[in-house]
Length: 216
Image (cartoon, rainbow, N blue to C red):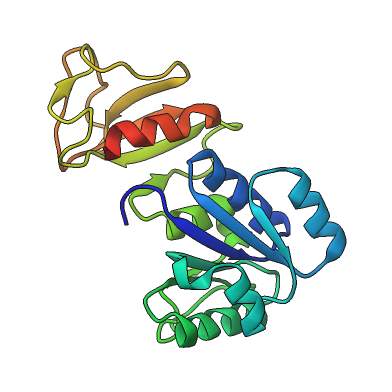
């Protein structure tokens, strides 16, 4: 999936809330379903997503969240059984929608037949969920503070395609570090070739601008 897309997150707890914030920073249309009234109110006050108070395992609640238009449903509650139920219901109601399930235990292969992606965030953090939801952008784990280190792929007709860094006007708060292999540091003469990937350091406030330059 390229560009901005619609994501439904089941669960607005620690992981779901962090994922919603990251995806909102990147310009995606995010809806969060949270059954706890207090948690739903807190998340609604953050203004990062449309928040629906309800049980995501109920078909009517999922449909209220715009399931028929969703590109991805990410079940990120703290209960593996609930998350699997949400993904199975999604497959029944919207077979073309990608599903991401969070597990409490180290995942094996038992979920592979039922969902598209499995994450184990107790080990990998919320960024693992974002990487599963947004496959064209790889956020490296545990780098530093709030700064994101992204591995970005240059699309064929992106604004930066076939241009050198000297010609590219990146927003303040972003820096192209190297190619994805990390063999050489990027400099003014570095050309951003379509089909290749580059490591980019980005402050959260300008992530959406940078992604648009690479995606077109």
